[in-house]
Image (spheres, rainbow, N blue to C red):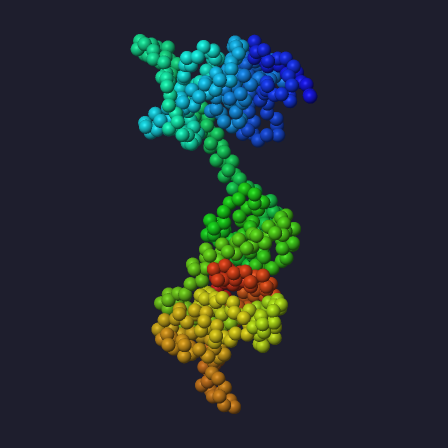
Amino acid sequence: MSKFYQKCVVNGCPNNAIGDKSVGVVRFFGVPFSTDKRNPSDSIIIQQRRELWLARLNFSDANIKTKYFVCNRHFVCGKPSYYLHKNHPDWAPSLLLNKARDSTRLQRRVLYSYSREAMVMNNLANYTQHNKEDNINITIHSPHPFEVNENLNSSEVLLTEELLDSPMDLSTSKPSHSLVNEEPSSSEHSPQLVSDLQKEIEKLTAQLEKMNADYISLKKEFAMYLERPITSNFFNKCRKSDKWMRVYTSLSTAKSFEILFKAIQCGIPEHNHCKLCKRQQLFLTLVKLSHNPTDIDLAFRFDISESTVSRYFHSWIDCIYYKLKTHVIIWPRLSQLHVAMPMCFRRHYPNTVSIMDCFETQIQIPHDRNDQAATYSTYKSRNTVKYLISATPNGTINFISKGYAGRKSDQFIVRHSGYIENLKPGDEVLADKGFEVAEEIGLRGAKLTTPAFKRAAQLTQLETEISRQVSNVRIHIEREIGCMRMKFDIMRGPVIMSNLNTFQDNVCFDDKIVAVCCILSNLNPSIIPFE
């Protein structure tokens, strides 16, 4: 058995002989001491606790040369409380500090029970008066013969909001004695009592002001954390430069990036464990859309792991899709389009509300043969995914469909994508001559205009002129698709199969990527001139 020699520093305490650790009859606890490795807030609390211990033990820091110990007989529960529980009776030793008299376990238990009864009764009184914010000192004078510390009675409990909110079974608390001894009425209004109360109020007021100052400082510190400095030099150089923001994100200006960030930042929760701030995460997502670098490349640039890059990208694509799709990709009325309709449409097609076309993106070859056959496009001679896109005369994308297998025809996608439901009587739609859906569009009261078909050996002069006019304005949708492919390399493909197989709300992840590219394209200036 290991032996040790520890001495209780309380004057007159007999627990200063050789003890046995294996038996554990007497336990010793060292005076609190804070090292530099702790957090600043914890160091302050431990220093306050150390000062209170030394004050009750009648010691000063200057006189301490070795480590001092206090035995368990000087605590109500037999041991010190947790260092953050400042309102606990055992936050500092309180029993038998001036005189060393033996106290049995039963006596300590009775004293602790009185303390709990005092807390319960005072809790009920404060709840009735609706005054939970006030701190009340309740003193219980024990009728038992053993003495306690005169400076700070162990039965003196400071009732705070933490004790009010703690669960407690009130039905079991049945105090059998008066909480406060009755004193003659002449002593209730003595000048000394009033003076003591005033000093106590001033002390509590000073403590409240200090707590308010600590709260303000912590609030500022938290705000500084939210606006923590940028750790990536790559983003720090691009965030204030229109040129580099246009190169790496395809947004026209740095102000557009800030507007986009403020519009969607509430969709991503703030996490303390995130190494990149929200702006850096959004910037990483836009770089991925614009240049489609590998995850390992972005991980090296931003000093994070590849899995973190993938998690950021998926989170922000979902956020932009759900936050902005219904607010940016909208179908305007014809009266609204007339306000900013370019002159090339005003002359010949003033009722145009949509220019539609389909585009295809190459995908990885599926393993299943049925999927290979369904996605094979005879026009592109490869496996593709096909989307229907529509733009207004002023160059704004107003419709983007979900992805379809490359083998599906343009007519099938128009009929099943929900595009026709947006048309209203009197609207006019421009399309290529491969879209044979004039009947379906005509049932909505709209009109489909396409270049003339070659029914004879040669088109007539009128048909040639009409085809030239339609092609001159319909070409803008081809330019829109080409600009999107140039700005966002991720739309060039090949699309990985995991993006096509990951569904949420009946929408695969590649559909969200294409929709986000259309949203970002709408945030940039139009490619169609007004004149």
